[in-house]
Image (tube, rainbow, N blue to C red; front, side, top):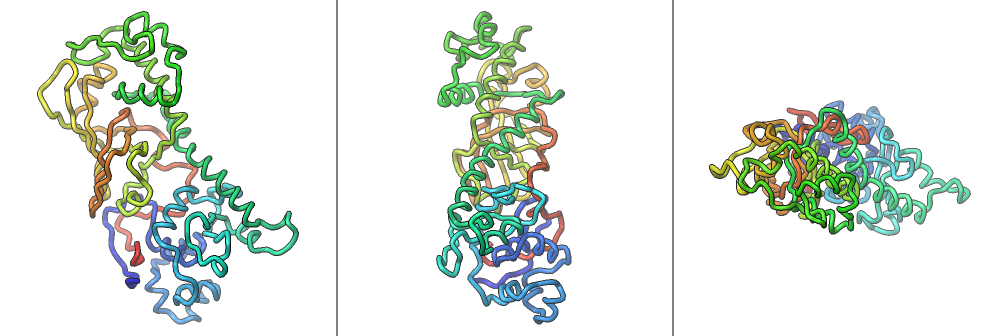
Amino acid sequence: MTDDREVRHDLRGSARVNPTVAALMRRGFDSQTANDIRALRLTLADLKQRDDPALEQLGLSASQIAAVREGGRPPIPFDTLVQVLWANRSSCCVCRNFDRAIILHHIVPWSRSLDHDAANLAVLCLEHHARAHRTGTLEQNLGAAQLRAFKQKWEEEVRHLDPKAILDATRVDGHHWWWFNHVRILEMAQRLGIDLTRRVNFVSVAARGWVDGRGQISERHLQSPYMYVGGDGIILYDYMREVAEEVWARTTIFNLSDDLDPGFLRRVVQPGDLILVQGRHSFKSLNREVSGPGQACAVQRQANRVRITFTIDRWEAVANSSWSAWLYGTQHAASILRVVHIEPGEQLHLQCTGIAIGSALQGLSTRHYYSATWPSSVDEEVEEGGEA
């Protein structure tokens, strides 16, 4: 394995995986100790250069000193560490307390399994980690079967945290969607078995000819500047918003607003994932069409060596203000996208299909249900493991 080295990331922003913390947690450190070392501006390379008494003065245990010296088990692979922490949102799968320090625990001990696979790793707080190692009555212990059950249940529930937070944010006063990909949203609703004719606003939009008898968008206003032209466009907006919110409530959406880091995203995002990204979006017309379908516009969100691109048809704007102002130039927005292709490299490129665009959502840029295990700040010198 390549020696750990110090690197400088001037544009890391709020990337979740801090390499110094990751390098230590891969070696069995808990997140609190790892963050304390990071706060001292020390790296794993620095620790290796110190003698044992100096490491003891930092509060390191004998097992932690052995891990620094590479005398214990091999480090958990970086990709596995990231995947397990992401799947558990860096919180204990037993108590689910986001404020507690955590550690990666081998469900079947490493000494017996020699297994660093994600299926054999549970995220535990220090209290429940101690219980997992305790010998005593069955009520006091956390055995392998119990840990697997806690882990499975928590990872299933975690997948609903982002959609719930997104829906809560979209329902506050002042939030407004600017654009919908009507075909894709209605296709998703059909695949989920949602009966469009039973939506609250179906009768109203059908009576005005906005949708057909199955709830699908009718061809209307094809020669108009944008789809929602007319005083009753608000009824179609209410219908589409209701359908979209029900789709998202039943779908896993990953909020990546804090995670625009190529090293992190290439390990957790896959084609087909639904993601939410908010921040500065740029809009660029691809032709001179100003009415009817086909008003193609390229959209880009770029930060921290991550580039996210997709194309929209401005004709699907939901209001005149969206069509004439918000979907132009540079705007602070929130977009829901489906990842189509991931182009790796020093600058990671996510090619996506746009699902919806709206005004920026309050409270999602820094999510209250995440622990502070992984943030790093701008211009911070960090230590990065060779595998990372």
